[in-house]
Length: 339
Image (cartoon, rainbow, N blue to C red; front, top):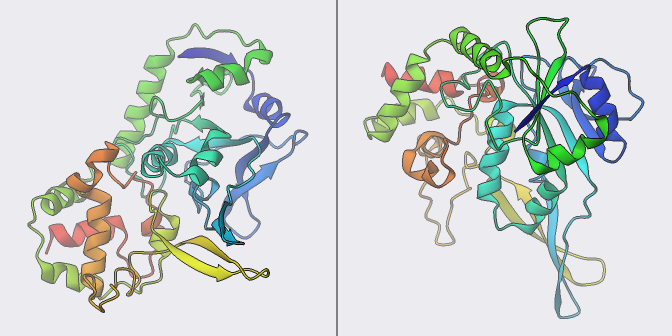
């Protein structure tokens, strides 16, 4: 890893936007923040919020709806997306960990991988905790984890000091060669560690989550507890839509104008009543409680998440913010611990 001094992140942003479509989280004018494209000449100051954006980077790689293939004239025709080089600028550590999780889930998927290969990820360390976040507890932040980004921006506690820029991949090194940056000589590793420790202290011990995950994996949560939680689930799919690691989808076959057929992939949710319903009519997740249980096992089950070497939850707290029934991660874990 190479580490440089950076006079301003705006300079880096303008440089990268010269050859790629660049996206950054910006206010949407309606009280929220979303990923928006940024032009080369944009002079807006880069000021990363401690809070994660309403939506993660998931849809940049796992499209909400897309055509997988077509069947025309007796032949199957590939429908791979046309992808231009792009940059995601200022991605939080938790969302980068989620991208790494999805990279493994979609390892053999050409649609996902074509978008992923065309993307440069510029992460940013968090120096303050977001409200409801617990990235430190699940080892997904607040500092960007090694291997999850190409470039990493590190804000300084001293506002007058230059930013730190970590070139963490070959693609990252190549992307900044023309900037001729000065190598950093400060004790940057200790500074990052101090930032991480401060955020961890702000987030606290997260006792309910630690105990709740242990109970879940030990099989000590009664089914009656899951059923009570299920009564609070409206089946709205809000949590699965904003969760950066959720990857459920459904196939949708549609006729084409020429008389052929095309298969689309659309986001789905394991919390929908018919998600697991079989052709025989049997539904292994027929009750809301069973569906809520399945969802949280996919987030925190050791056996399910072993191939990914990380939990399916990255501690971003989005589910807490979006769930109208109050059964985001903190709500669920508090209830299972105190059942």
